[in-house]
Image 1: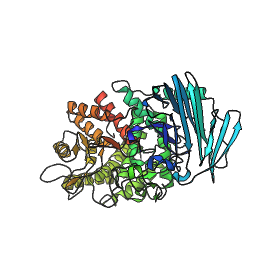
Image 2 (image 1 turned 45 degrees about the vertical axis):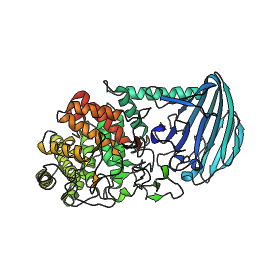
Image 3 (image 1 turned 90 degrees about the vertical axis):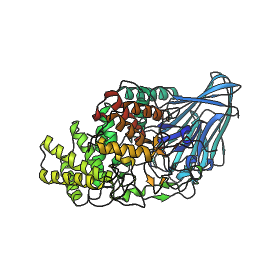
Image 4 (image 1 turned 135 degrees about the vertical axis):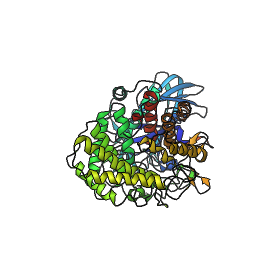
Length: 593
């Protein structure tokens, strides 16, 4: 049976991630790297496509779970008529790629079943499996071509159909430990860690990390959980942050809007850098800068919207046709075709990142300014062109108002940096271009009758991306055109108190409401003086977090369920940003300066 998206919790080691359900099943795991082929892919398929479950051998089970406070160490407590047990799941830091699962009987007696059934290449390939005895007990090796996993335990395991199975009974205070390890091709496995030490070290590391945050105030637990989630989505060797650790969790159940989010978007980088700097994580911001520098130097002649975790061009989009998809939502994809789109706004987001870095004293390569000047030189001839926009439309290319505003941002931030840091630049030309874009947006991006900003030139529809206009400083939230825009968004796009991204024809887009857009509406309310409205919506959004504090990309108001890839970095970035704004009352806590 497919678990709701909200039933999953995140495990990670700053290189890769796994999702474990409330039933104790790890249904998604891409060992070694976020964008590696999954060896557990039941999340977007069925159990035939790989999973690892540890659970009571009982149909009558109640479940509670939590992360150990301020950590990424998960505790799931199962209670039956006969007893109670806790499964503690964690991935130690340090690049060794171990998944530790410790089962402890709290009271009574617990019959436990364990089944580890990896299927390599996103569930396509059943491995060869062999067993051997070792100092730590039994080892099972799962192998297919260069892929190799090792499951270690003192519990007796039986091999069948490319899976390891165990059934055992624990009395009060008994425990059982299973450790799944991954080895890179042609490299040996790291030693199996001491369980108690590894769990304690993992928890201590996360607590030390989150203690570096400078945030102190209301909603502390939500902010800390969001920051931990964002850190867990970071690929430590290179510094980039993936949008989400999953692929193809649907925007519409049964629909085709199922995309791979295991890449780093330039658009997200601006939000991430701002949040990290605002909360005191300068090292993480510097790592983002280093990742960005790598991407820019490799691909300066064709700026992409997204890159791999190492700053390379994202792979071509492929359909994984053997996977039926989450609740039948096909296709399941790897790679992302948005990589080839022309998205005008990316220039603004990229230069915003550079602006933030300079303003906070993060050193940039000497030639970054020259590259930035070349980008602006190219933008001068291209900002008048249509593009696919922030939502990466695959069948629509228009003069999107948001895209034009971000082109304005590119010139505005560059002008400000040139003036502040005395950098050589054609300032008069840049000022002229900035003013031309502003005049163009105000002339063509505003509905002549309603006085509100429109999704694209010639349209009368609004788009939630327009909520970014005051957040980037193009106009204040109190401007009459922005007030009219917010009113139109409330009328056309708000459903059940949450915000859809846009409409299609006469109908609201059938996807779920987009959580980041709702946080942007919170920010607009606050900046316009509607503080009660801001707080009501903000509290409603916090109520969408699952039981361990995680948010996805979207929320289906009718079905009352989370949708889209999970957990979604942009949703958690927006949560922290809105919290900082409401705490400080300072627009710079949210605005892209």
